[in-house]
Image (cartoon, rainbow, N blue to C red; front, side):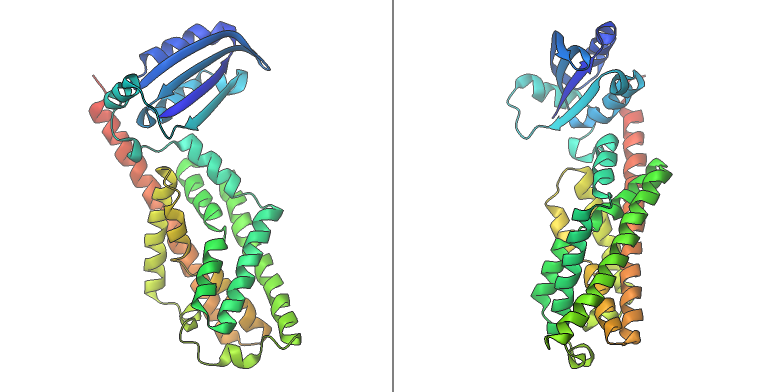
Length: 312
């Protein structure tokens, strides 16, 4: 279930209440007349089944409530109510299959912001992966993968492509490309610093690395794994099952490939640098393609389901 808190101008309250009362899947409707002060208006509370939420939010936006008042949506982890159970039964489809496009757009917009925090996480993750590469330590590689925040911009690109939002596409691309470029440059400097301290050596790069040599040797399996991870990651976002994102993060070689490219470049091993960049691009491309196709499939299938279940 979703909980909606609306601030509505007094002259639009009756229209909004009528919409909520006639929307299948809504319950627990409450109207607090004159309770809002900024902006001035009435406060309307209700709960709605997740599978009916996206259409309802769209209709509220069509009424201009997001401009004249506000629309706040919260996920409810536990609701003990026979009315709520009935609302979920009446709403078409399953909540886990429904996509809240407004929520997805907002989440990916925030995760795609090129901020100091985002860059710090990506840089630290790349430097951790550099240590893992030099030590041939798979545990450090996995840890660096989990720290990397790059799935946000990747999901942002897929969402923007499906929603036809070019500004979000460019915003996400800047966060992705700019973030990796700066993180890799800083990691080159980090590698030179570690070399000056005697902690990194050329032999560590050029020697046998049975646990991490795959990073700079891309093949079609790299794309396949990234594609599958992109599907899983997108489903975890749209179904609000964020726990799956950890599995996605540690199954693709994005941050480690960027780290290996930076370290190899610092030692003028351009063969490894090129191979690592190809690995990075294969993984990024696989995730974007998979995420976009998954969202398109969800959109088409859900629209078809609504057409079948909507009364004539």
